[in-house]
Length: 468
Ligand SMILES: Nc1nc2c(ncn2[C@@H]2O[C@H](COP(=O)(O)OP(=O)(O)OP(=O)(O)O)[C@@H](O)[C@H]2O)c(=O)[nH]1
Ligand SMILES: [Mg+2]
Image (cartoon, rainbow, N blue to C red; front, side, top):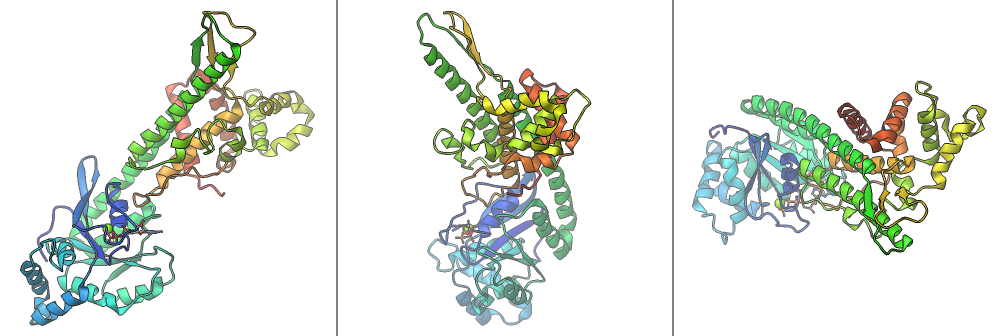
């Protein structure tokens, strides 16, 4: 075994196009790792660090796939006098074959060099294709290096052959795990690190420290993300657009302009929230459909899509009625709109709640009568409860999506079409009403402690898995 590196280093190796780079991206949280459906994308060994607060915790080496493992194996068999010399034989092979670009073993040398320099091995296979003995050459070569090693079965297209692979791999690797880099959550990522800590004692303290640091870091990230959302919700709900009436004008033009200014301001604030979250979660390259907000994508102001992000009608009637009831008189929001409608007690409140749906114009344009030149006209702030919940629902959906997104996932992000009702129902009923009341007064601005309260609700809601 070569000398211990100051922090753990793992070389991720295997056949071409089996998700090696995807694993590197997820475990180092980096968008910069090149991933593609084209086989042979990675042509040079390249290191990526997992850094937390400027400290490198571990390094993964992304490598090209094995191209000629059987030829390499037969060279080694001819050149190895006995079992004790196997590692030296691999070293001799690397020394003898200059790592020039046109060497026929270029890719093998690229992937063996970091291993011989002391890296642990993460061997990646695809659990959706059958095992075949052709893989034995490359597994044997890795075994000959004598480095600590584990195998990951990536179920790229399903788990059909996972068991078969498990049986074959366990002959060569003492640790075998199923790991999908596209969907692995933090806990699953930790199990891979922990397995390596078990496998190679000298790295155990460093790996345990890393898991503790990552756990703390992820907790902070969640809170910061939820705070960004809370701030932007406040910003959106309290925003006011204004224009000064010119000397000559047509009222309908003024109205249109004000509406346009207001809507684009809110879209702008929402987009800025999304960009800040992308930066925070290190997904700078992520594409979203949000760029097409004015085209066919269901956008903030498209009332026909509100049910996708906001609350269903019955829920909103129940919540607005409860929130409107005298302070302290928190009624059972679980009763829903229908039963409320028959209750004589709530007759008066209900007319207010029902009117939510008659006037669903979020802009709240403030143009009464014929305006005068020089007068200032305003739109906003947002007081419409239906729309307030759309703003909340979309923000929470976006946060949930980015919290779960791995760095292997390069697809265009879509906001999940889930309504907020399921999420809200996970809160205690008293909390639901408190949240509604807080949102209703957000247009006036929130105190620091109210903003933190909103952050906590946003986080709770976004950690709920929606049942769509
Ligand atoms: N659906 C799905 N696709 C995956 C998964 N892992 C990798 N892929 C896809 O498989 C393709 C190859 O992934 P890479 O990570 O580039 O594979 P690689 O082993 O680094 O490939 P080379 O560098 O060409 O050897 C990409 O299109 C990935 O998006 C997975 O778990 N699920
Ligand atoms: Mg690659």
